[in-house]
Length: 211
Image (tube, one colour):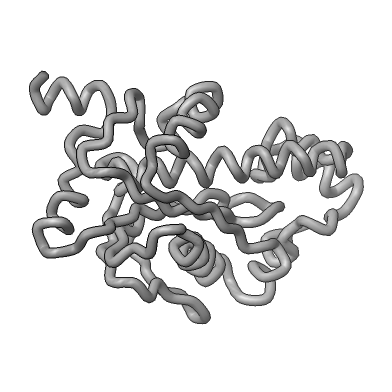
């Protein structure tokens, strides 16, 4: 199968992972977060170390996959990974610090939670520190990494599915907000429910200044 055909099937050949290995690193993890924009709930992050040449059919940026496909890939990633970890930072800490710091802290916590200590990380995006948090392991920031790096894509799926599952649990605890429909994002329905009921304990107060 050609490189182009492999890219069409999934993530391709792991160019950034390969470059890190060629630079002398042994255990390379991908890291991504989910839930920076919602009005409610934690921000989640995941870190994944994939075996070199690992083949997970259909692996892609979580945003490009259906919920059903993400759920199907979730256990496959866990089974295929040499190590994986999921972490979160709660709404209260997001309000106390800021969302960038919370995102970075969640990713650092996920990296620290890996059962195998990575010697290098591929971080999705172009930011590796906030006012109160930073990525401390040697790393590269990879813009649109969840679309071009298999390990970052795998992390994006673990983070997204974990957060969505949490918000479904919160939908049962706080049924008036309809979290099962919008997962905490700022939809028209969500704003209507906020105006009617006010914020819940898991809402990010700093995100609600316009209410």
